[in-house]
Length: 315
Ligand SMILES: C[S@@+](CC[C@H](N)C(=O)[O-])C[C@H]1O[C@@H](n2cnc3c(N)ncnc32)[C@H](O)[C@@H]1O
Image (cartoon, rainbow, N blue to C red):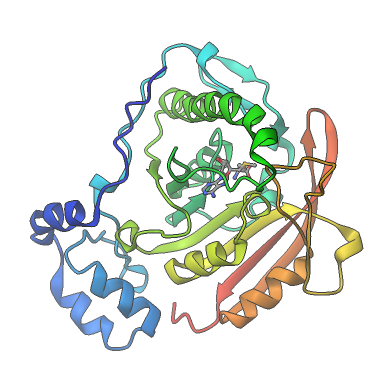
C-alpha cells in the first residue's frame, strides 16, 4: 500500500501559511507575557510568532503548530495491511493482538500523570496505543514518527549483514504506520502525526505541556539529543524504557549491540540515573521514578518510567 502522507513541510511553507494564521493570534497576551518568560520559551515564541495560538486559561497558554506540518490521515481499508506493535481493542474490531500488551498497566507506563487538557508531544507512537490512551484521558496529542529519509538509526553492522533486514524493514514500517492510521480512524481520533527527523524537531510544532518518550530512546544513537529537544519544547517529560537492575546506582548506559548478537535496532541499556541526572542538568526536577511490568508476547518485562518537570516553570 502506498502512503498518502504529506511529507514534513519545509520551513518556507510553514512561514507562508502562517501569515493567514496570524490574523487569528491574540497578540496582547503574547507581548505582555514574553517579557517574563524563560529564555528557552521566548526563543520558541520568536520562531513561532506567526503561528496559531489556542485559547486556554491564561496560566497555560501555549503556541501550537501550523496545521500544515502534519501528515494527512492515511486511509487504510484492510486490517491485513497492518502490523500491530501494540495489542489494541478497537471499536468494531475487538481485540487485535500485537507484540506488546500495555493494557494492564498503561497508567504506570505513563507515570500516572494527569493528561486532561494537556498538549502532548509523543516521540515514536508505533501503533499508537499510548497516543489514543492519552487522548482518551483528555490530551491533545502530536506524535513524531520516522520517514524513509529519516528512518531508524540502524546500528552500523557491515552492509552485507544489514541488507537482509533493510527490505523487510521498509515493509514492516509501512504496515506499522498503517496500524496507527487504522486505529486512528476506528477511534475517530484527532491526534496528529509529524513525519520527520526526531533530531531536528521544527519549532513550528509548537509548545507542549508534556513530552513522552516511550521505549524509543534505546533505539536511537543520540538519545540525549532527543531528550534535550523535548525538554526545550515541553514543561514535563515522561521517559519509559527497559529496566536493567545491574546498571542501577550510577548515571550510565551500556552499548547493547555486539558483533555476535546482531542487535541492529537497539543501541543502549540505560540506568534510571542516566536520565534523572541529565534531567537535573537541563533544569528538570524528577518528580517520580517507578518500575512496572509490561507484557511482550505474554512474557513479563520490567520497565521504568521517569517523570520530570521543568524546575523554573512558572505554572
Ligand atoms: C519500540 S516502539 C515504542 C512505541 C511506543 N512509544 C511505546 O512506548 O509503546 C519505537 C517507536 O519509535 C519510533 N522510532 C524509532 N526510532 C526513531 C527515530 N529515530 N525517530 C523517531 N521515531 C523513532 C519507531 O518507529 C516506533 O514508532
